[in-house]
Picture 1 (cartoon, one colour):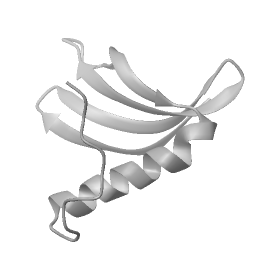
Picture 2 (cartoon, helix red, strand yellow):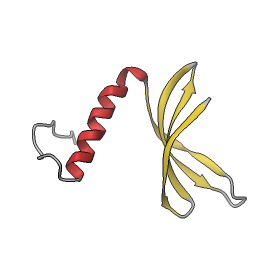
Picture 3 (cartoon, one colour):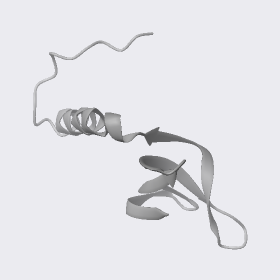
Length: 84
């Protein structure tokens, strides 16, 4: 079972797709690149981000904060520094 939440084209033949997908009988948030093959069919990339239900709220807050920073809707600061 898969429920498509949204997608956008990165460039011709490549898109990012966000969906709810069932994995081991649990729904998970799946963020993955999809590639167009020579026959015109779309296939998921091997690498992606899968967020389990217990982390979905934290993940959502982080993405919202990142989007707000990118759009200059909140000042930078108060967050943790990324590790090297």
